Image 1: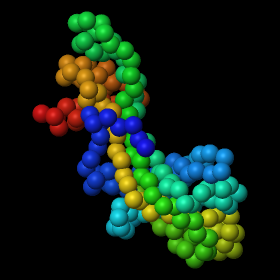
Image 2: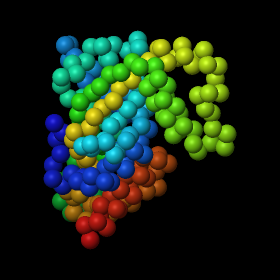
Image 3: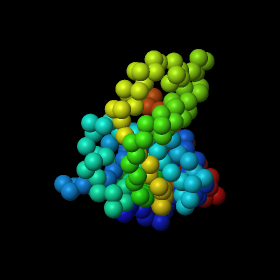
Length: 215
């Protein structure tokens, strides 16, 4: 399913589950009669459910994905981490022999399993409240669903359908220059670290972490 050479595989299930739990947005990918269907949606993750947890969110009722997906086929939830362009000019190998090309570093997690669609208003209300409470928790005055008029919330609930991905497999990939010699990896860290782009700096830290892990 995921092209994942051994050098880039992340196999620590606990760490992968922690990353999913910390993520806020997933790309939900399903298969319909006309091919793949894709939506972005905020999610919550319950890692305690067997075998590998449940990823839950909701879709707008007007989004055809919930009706057009073939639920007999596995669905995917894709979580993207930091990414960065890698210039061959940063490699020590460029100065040694010049046989280098550009690439891209990135990390991702793919969770796959059985997708469940539900429309029960009570279950949807509970899920929306859980989702809201999670993302409002860091604010000084968190907004709550109950802050809005009840009839307004009821209409909003009617406009969505719930999704639960019962996860049966989790794959992690972190392409962080592990296939390059140590001097090239050091060049990547030096090249990315001063960048004003947050993802570039995050990738620099990830490359450094993988170097330390190897040591």
